[in-house]
Amino acid sequence: MPPKLFLAILAGAAVAVVLVSSRPKAVDEVALQAEAAVLTKDFGASLLGILKGALETSGPEGAVDFCNKEAPTIAEGASKRSGWKIARTSLKPRNPASAPDEFERAVMTEFVARIAAGEPAVSLKRAEIVEHDGQRSFRYVQAIPTAELCLTCHGSELKPAVAAKIKQLYPADQATGFRAGDMRGIFTLRREL
Image (tube, rainbow, N blue to C red; front, side, top):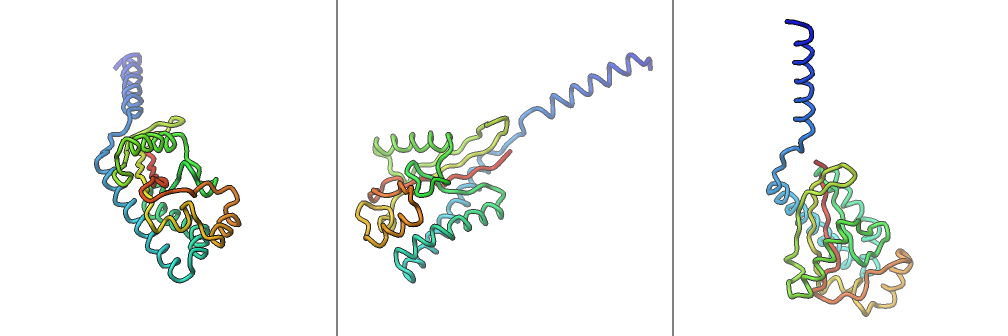
Protein backbone atom coordinates (compact mmCIF):
# COMPACT_ATOMS: atom_id res chain seq x y z
CA MET A 1 0.00 0.00 0.00
CA PRO A 2 1.44 3.39 -0.95
CA PRO A 3 2.40 5.50 2.11
CA LYS A 4 0.13 8.40 1.05
CA LEU A 5 -2.89 6.11 0.80
CA PHE A 6 -2.08 4.58 4.19
CA LEU A 7 -1.82 8.07 5.78
CA ALA A 8 -5.11 9.13 4.17
CA ILE A 9 -6.88 6.02 5.55
CA LEU A 10 -5.34 6.58 8.99
CA ALA A 11 -6.39 10.25 9.01
CA GLY A 12 -9.94 9.29 7.97
CA ALA A 13 -10.15 6.73 10.75
CA ALA A 14 -8.94 9.30 13.29
CA VAL A 15 -11.61 11.79 12.16
CA ALA A 16 -14.28 9.08 12.45
CA VAL A 17 -13.15 8.24 16.00
CA VAL A 18 -13.27 11.93 16.99
CA LEU A 19 -16.74 12.35 15.48
CA VAL A 20 -18.11 9.25 17.20
CA SER A 21 -16.53 10.07 20.57
CA SER A 22 -17.71 13.69 20.48
CA ARG A 23 -21.37 12.72 20.06
CA PRO A 24 -23.43 13.00 23.23
CA LYS A 25 -23.89 9.66 24.96
CA ALA A 26 -27.27 8.05 24.55
CA VAL A 27 -29.19 8.59 27.76
CA ASP A 28 -32.23 6.71 29.01
CA GLU A 29 -34.06 9.72 30.43
CA VAL A 30 -37.05 7.66 31.53
CA ALA A 31 -34.84 5.37 33.60
CA LEU A 32 -32.95 8.33 35.09
CA GLN A 33 -36.21 10.07 36.00
CA ALA A 34 -37.54 6.91 37.64
CA GLU A 35 -34.30 6.47 39.60
CA ALA A 36 -34.34 10.12 40.70
CA ALA A 37 -37.97 9.84 41.82
CA VAL A 38 -37.14 6.81 44.00
CA LEU A 39 -34.08 8.54 45.47
CA THR A 40 -36.18 11.64 46.22
CA LYS A 41 -38.87 9.58 47.92
CA ASP A 42 -36.30 7.70 50.02
CA PHE A 43 -34.39 10.87 50.96
CA GLY A 44 -37.56 12.74 51.87
CA ALA A 45 -38.89 9.83 53.94
CA SER A 46 -35.56 9.49 55.74
CA LEU A 47 -35.44 13.20 56.60
CA LEU A 48 -39.08 13.24 57.70
CA GLY A 49 -38.71 10.18 59.91
CA ILE A 50 -35.63 11.47 61.67
CA LEU A 51 -37.10 14.97 61.97
CA LYS A 52 -40.28 13.59 63.59
CA GLY A 53 -38.09 11.65 66.03
CA ALA A 54 -36.11 14.80 66.86
CA LEU A 55 -39.34 16.74 67.43
CA GLU A 56 -40.67 14.04 69.75
CA THR A 57 -37.49 13.64 71.77
CA SER A 58 -36.01 17.14 71.74
CA GLY A 59 -38.86 19.47 70.79
CA PRO A 60 -38.78 22.09 68.04
CA GLU A 61 -35.43 23.57 69.15
CA GLY A 62 -33.87 20.10 68.90
CA ALA A 63 -35.39 19.68 65.47
CA VAL A 64 -33.75 22.93 64.34
CA ASP A 65 -30.43 21.57 65.68
CA PHE A 66 -31.06 18.34 63.77
CA CYS A 67 -31.67 20.19 60.52
CA ASN A 68 -28.54 22.24 61.05
CA LYS A 69 -26.20 19.34 61.83
CA GLU A 70 -27.70 16.12 60.54
CA ALA A 71 -29.70 16.93 57.40
CA PRO A 72 -26.61 17.89 55.35
CA THR A 73 -24.90 14.67 56.46
CA ILE A 74 -27.92 12.62 55.38
CA ALA A 75 -27.90 14.33 51.96
CA GLU A 76 -24.16 13.76 51.61
CA GLY A 77 -24.50 10.07 52.49
CA ALA A 78 -27.38 9.59 50.05
CA SER A 79 -25.31 11.32 47.36
CA LYS A 80 -22.29 9.09 47.93
CA ARG A 81 -24.36 5.89 47.94
CA SER A 82 -26.30 6.78 44.81
CA GLY A 83 -23.83 8.59 42.57
CA TRP A 84 -26.22 11.55 42.35
CA LYS A 85 -25.85 14.96 43.99
CA ILE A 86 -28.89 15.12 46.28
CA ALA A 87 -29.89 18.32 48.05
CA ARG A 88 -32.69 20.69 48.97
CA THR A 89 -32.99 24.36 48.15
CA SER A 90 -35.57 27.12 48.23
CA LEU A 91 -36.34 30.59 46.93
CA LYS A 92 -36.31 31.47 50.65
CA PRO A 93 -33.36 29.44 51.96
CA ARG A 94 -32.68 28.99 55.65
CA ASN A 95 -28.98 28.45 55.00
CA PRO A 96 -27.29 30.72 52.40
CA ALA A 97 -25.04 27.78 51.47
CA SER A 98 -28.18 26.08 50.14
CA ALA A 99 -29.15 28.91 47.80
CA PRO A 100 -30.44 27.74 44.40
CA ASP A 101 -28.40 27.77 41.21
CA GLU A 102 -29.83 29.34 38.02
CA PHE A 103 -31.57 26.16 36.90
CA GLU A 104 -33.18 25.55 40.29
CA ARG A 105 -34.28 29.18 40.60
CA ALA A 106 -35.88 29.11 37.14
CA VAL A 107 -37.73 25.85 37.87
CA MET A 108 -38.97 27.10 41.25
CA THR A 109 -40.15 30.36 39.67
CA GLU A 110 -42.10 28.31 37.13
CA PHE A 111 -43.51 26.13 39.93
CA VAL A 112 -44.67 29.22 41.86
CA ALA A 113 -46.57 30.40 38.76
CA ARG A 114 -48.14 26.97 38.32
CA ILE A 115 -49.21 26.92 41.98
CA ALA A 116 -50.72 30.39 41.56
CA ALA A 117 -52.68 28.97 38.58
CA GLY A 118 -54.10 26.24 40.81
CA GLU A 119 -51.73 23.28 40.58
CA PRO A 120 -50.93 21.67 43.94
CA ALA A 121 -47.27 21.87 44.99
CA VAL A 122 -47.20 18.14 45.70
CA SER A 123 -47.64 17.36 41.97
CA LEU A 124 -44.77 19.49 40.64
CA LYS A 125 -41.73 17.73 39.17
CA ARG A 126 -39.32 18.42 36.35
CA ALA A 127 -36.57 16.38 34.73
CA GLU A 128 -34.26 17.29 31.87
CA ILE A 129 -30.76 17.16 30.52
CA VAL A 130 -28.93 20.46 30.86
CA GLU A 131 -25.51 21.62 29.80
CA HIS A 132 -23.45 24.01 31.90
CA ASP A 133 -19.83 24.95 31.18
CA GLY A 134 -19.56 22.13 28.65
CA GLN A 135 -20.76 19.47 31.10
CA ARG A 136 -24.05 17.64 30.49
CA SER A 137 -26.06 16.50 33.46
CA PHE A 138 -29.46 15.07 34.17
CA ARG A 139 -31.43 17.30 36.55
CA TYR A 140 -34.47 16.27 38.56
CA VAL A 141 -36.46 18.68 40.71
CA GLN A 142 -39.49 17.97 42.87
CA ALA A 143 -41.43 20.50 44.93
CA ILE A 144 -41.53 20.17 48.72
CA PRO A 145 -45.00 21.16 49.90
CA THR A 146 -45.33 22.71 53.34
CA ALA A 147 -47.12 20.33 55.69
CA GLU A 148 -48.63 21.26 59.07
CA LEU A 149 -45.56 19.79 60.79
CA CYS A 150 -43.29 22.15 58.81
CA LEU A 151 -45.06 25.22 60.20
CA THR A 152 -43.44 24.63 63.61
CA CYS A 153 -40.18 26.01 62.21
CA HIS A 154 -41.22 27.50 58.86
CA GLY A 155 -44.58 29.14 59.60
CA SER A 156 -45.53 32.74 60.35
CA GLU A 157 -46.04 32.38 64.09
CA LEU A 158 -42.99 30.73 65.63
CA LYS A 159 -42.59 30.18 69.34
CA PRO A 160 -39.99 32.60 70.75
CA ALA A 161 -37.57 29.80 71.68
CA VAL A 162 -37.78 28.35 68.16
CA ALA A 163 -37.27 31.77 66.56
CA ALA A 164 -34.26 32.38 68.83
CA LYS A 165 -32.72 29.01 67.93
CA ILE A 166 -33.19 29.67 64.22
CA LYS A 167 -31.64 33.14 64.57
CA GLN A 168 -28.69 31.63 66.47
CA LEU A 169 -27.98 28.91 63.88
CA TYR A 170 -29.12 30.75 60.75
CA PRO A 171 -28.65 34.51 61.11
CA ALA A 172 -29.58 35.06 57.44
CA ASP A 173 -32.70 32.86 57.60
CA GLN A 174 -35.43 33.56 55.04
CA ALA A 175 -37.38 30.30 55.45
CA THR A 176 -40.37 31.44 57.49
CA GLY A 177 -43.81 32.79 56.70
CA PHE A 178 -45.03 29.68 54.89
CA ARG A 179 -48.59 28.35 55.02
CA ALA A 180 -49.71 24.74 54.68
CA GLY A 181 -49.67 23.76 51.01
CA ASP A 182 -47.09 26.36 49.97
CA MET A 183 -44.01 25.17 48.12
CA ARG A 184 -41.35 25.50 50.80
CA GLY A 185 -38.57 24.46 48.44
CA ILE A 186 -37.45 21.59 46.24
CA PHE A 187 -35.56 18.36 46.31
CA THR A 188 -32.89 18.75 43.65
CA LEU A 189 -30.90 15.90 42.14
CA ARG A 190 -28.13 16.01 39.54
CA ARG A 191 -26.18 13.28 37.81
CA GLU A 192 -23.29 14.03 35.49
CA LEU A 193 -23.54 12.35 32.08
